[in-house]
Length: 236
Image (cartoon, rainbow, N blue to C red; front, side, top):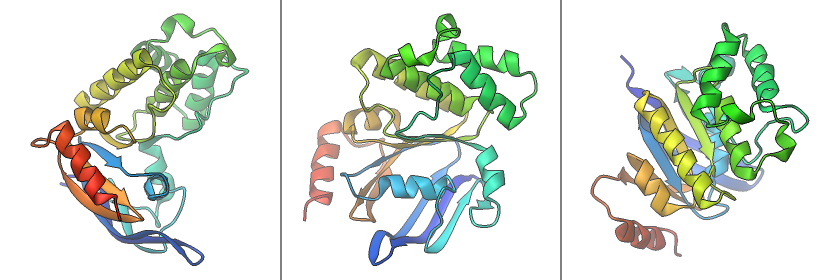
């Protein structure tokens, strides 16, 4: 039985003469929350896009739920939920209409029931009939989470989901992520927030100048120790 949700082997990504990622090796176990830290330009989003099959590696192999990203990207996309800097929501639609649109794209059965479930999980049931152009950043991000989990994906890819959120919205989002982990989902979280990433994650990695310079469990490291480690690993 495959116990790895994400398996990255000797993966490099180049853009012309620029090497964005160099020889990345990383395994994320099923049911794990993995936090990836790194400064701007380190290659975090590039790596996330490779996992999401939105880009192809220049060399190396990536498997998601045991499936090669090169050979069967469409099958992988059925099993992942992806939240990027863009919410991929339509401002002129209501929260419910947005979810119905994506649910039909996925061909979901019992769609109305599933929409009710994810709206409740995101704390947006009372706002489901409102157009999202009037939503706060935090509410849109919660709806983006609802969109991402609508089709019961086993893996969630989150790119800086806390950016621009107030403290209350961050707490709500953290609670949603914790609940998803309890349901057995694997979560790959890219974040600048060392403290929040440490609190949520089972394992973490530090990416610097396209290289995975550290990877370990969060179990035996304090916030101050992580801060020191991060500074040491991301300083030339």
